[in-house]
Length: 179
Length: 294
Image 1 (cartoon, rainbow over the protein chains, first blue to last red):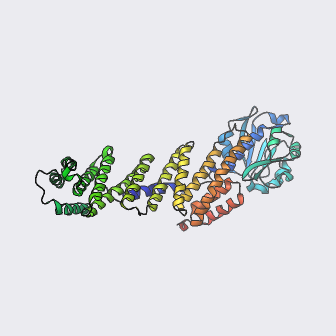
Image 2: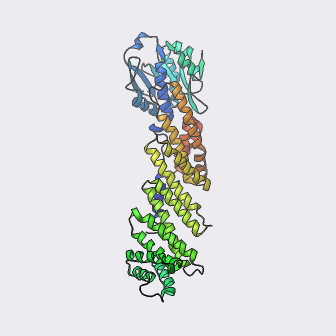
Image 3: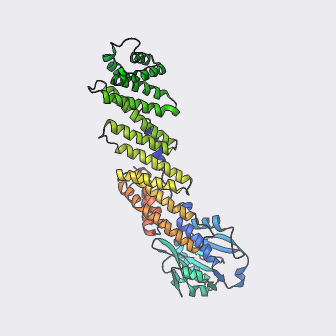
C-alpha cells in the first residue's frame, strides 16, 4: 500500500470541484427566467379592448435579450393566453416594429425606444421595458430592481392609451402604479 | 517496509535466541520469517494466550507485525478487523515495553497502519462512500493522536473535509432536491473555513453551492406559478445569493486574478439585480488575459 496514494485521489476530487461555472449562460440567467414568467403572467391579467387582438396567435415580440427569448420559447411557446396560442418572435433591432400584443425592449436597445414609442402610440400593444423613468416616456409596464428583487411598475394612463385594461390583481401586485 | 522488517528482526533477534524449539513464540517467528503468515498467526495467537508470553511485549510486537502483513494481503471484507487487531497488539506491546526495547519497531508499524486509514478514507471518497470515509478519517485521527497527542492534523483535516464537501456537492448537483447533501456540503466547507478561513477552494465552493441553490430555485419556476409565487421564490433565492456573496468576495480578495471568481461575482450580483456591480466584474473578467490566471 503506497504511502502517497491518497494525494492523487484527493487532488482529483478537489480539481473537479474547482471547475469554473458560467453563471450568465441561458440556463443561469435568473433575470431572464423571472422576466419570462412575469411576461406570461402579466399577459394573462390584461384585457385587449380591440376585438381584432382577441383572435389569432398571441404574439410576444422581443427586441434584444436572447436569453429571455430562449426562455419564452422553452417554457411558454406551447401555452395560450385565453384561447390564443402564444407565438414568440425575436424581432430585428429596429424601431420599425411589426404589430404584436406584447413587446419587450431590453436595456441594450434603449436607443430604439423613442422611435418605438412614436410608432406604437395609440396601438394595442403592451410595451414592456426595463429602465428608470420608462413610465414617463410611455411604457405600460417597466421592470424595476427593488431590494435585490425584480419587480414591475405600471402606468394605467399609458395602458389606457393603448386600449388595454390592466387587471386588479396586476395592479395590486405591482411595486408602483401610476394612475 | 523492508526497513520495518529489518527493525523487527533486529529487535526480536536480541531476545529470542534462547527460545526452545516448540515454544509457540519461536514457532511464530520461524513461520513469519518463512512467510507462512497463516501458520505464524496460529502460533502467535497461541503464544499470547499463554502465561509465559501474555505480558511479553516481544510477543505482542510480533503479533502486531503478523497481523499487519496479513491485513496488507487481505480482501476488504476482513481488512479493517485485521488492521484493528494489528494496532491493538502493537499498542499492547508499547504499553508493556517498559524499557522501550521494541518501541521503534512498534511505532513505525503503528504509523504505517495509521496512515493506511487516511489512504482508505481517500479511496472511500473516490468511491463516493462518505460513511466509510468519515469512519476511516476518524480512525486515522484517533490513531495518530494516540501515537502523538501533540500531532498537527489540521492540514489533513482540511484536505479531507474539502474533498468530502466536494462529494456532497456532486451528490447535490446530481439531484438538486437532495437538500440533505446540500446541508452536508455547507457543513463540510464551513468546517474547512473554521480550520483555515483563508482556504480559497472552500470559499469558492461554498459560494458556488449557495449561488447554484438560489439559481435552482428560480429555475424551478413553472408557467403556472402566479406573480405572488414568483415574488416568494425570488425572496428565498435572494437569501442564497446573499449568503454566496461574502465567500466569493473573500476568494476574489485572496486571488484577484482568478477568472472563475470574477465570473462568480458577476453572476451573484446579476442575480441580486445589481447591474452596476455585475457589469464591473464582467468587464474585469473580459479584460483578464487567459494566461494571467494563477
